[in-house]
Length: 475
Ligand code: SAH
Ligand code: SF4
Ligand code: F3S
Image 1 (tube, rainbow, N blue to C red):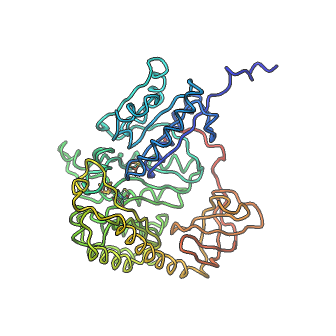
Image 2: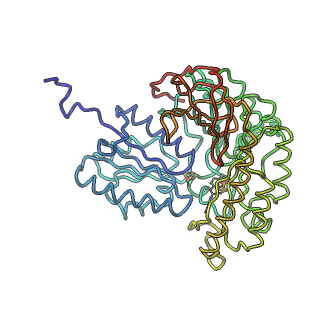
Image 3: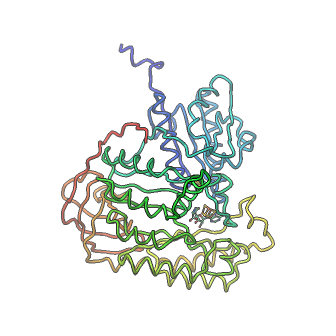
């Protein structure tokens, strides 16, 4: 018998489930990287896992409910396998701290958003001492490089900023992610260079309000007596990242409309690697609602910035976020939203039903909450307006040749490949030969639908350079 096949020598496995936004996806990559550095291997099968991580979100209420539902299921698993360790991390852990331990005392580690890097140490501590909870209120500085396990060899998230200094009345993010801290400029560029060296061709710069990137860095330098020019650092960063050899696509999310500046538009227009896609969250088209949300812009100001971006970048795709049913939203307010959405001619929009989050300003206005049936009617009317413009924008692409980055077989039909255009649109197409993920190909668009395009392959323009097995790297 092979001595290596005994139960003691079986490699331990971890399973990570991620909720929420790209920040959390990236934090999950870091947690996975730390666990791999500790000798564990990944599994997609919960039944095989020795460590289960739920990296949570609390942006809307159903996110909370989902977590508590999943925890119920895990309790049964843990009862049958007491060695199983369960970690709850992320924004809901930060928000609900002790509540998780009260409602789910079998959870081994509760870790917040400011100390993801401690996950493995806390797991070791919990093995010896029982359940641990470590929630810090702030990150002291931008978290230093942590090992990362990326799922995609050709594409990577790059966090340029953590936290948020705004106070949108509906939003829980500032209270769970802390104040805005920017990652030093040279550090970001060096990180992207390292990624490019590993064969990454696409990077997405992440922050809650990327346009204010660097404000804290400049303030700290001024406070230290240096004369620092008031320059828009995010625009410079876009240019610097776009100039890194091997990086063919630069994306970023999200810019805040109030801080979206002409310099950023110019950097997008003049840096070929920066994709022709802008995600500019509108939230509402009513000035009254925008003011109550503390968004810092009017509908007209927003549309003017959008028009400026479209003038500078003629082939720009634009997407947005909209909240329906913010407290006090009247039929008239909502009609303004429909008008601005129609004028915005979006390629797609993420539409959300307002969800009160305890501790936020808007959640206090319960007397102004919009009745559920009114909200769902508005939500449906908004969906129709968004789909109309999305379909029109997509139909306008039919007949055009687009460069796509191949992402793999389509989810619905494994005989069909899926790629993404610079505008961030999914294109499904058939290839006579298998095409490696991470390849670039030219595709002629043949059909349009509201959420994707169909096309035919013309030629493969570049093969991937990344390794298929992605090692854990400190980036
Ligand atoms: N920092 C980003 C937003 C991050 S949250 C920005 O300002 O653009 C992503 C989206 O979730 C928001 O744009 C908003 O549309 C939605 N959202 C946030 N809080 C919400 C709430 N309480 N109810 C409904 N939607 C919400
Ligand atoms: Fe939330 Fe507003 Fe900050 Fe975005 S900018 S994370 S919506 S507070
Ligand atoms: Fe993201 Fe959800 Fe937190 S949207 S920042 S994971 S609350």
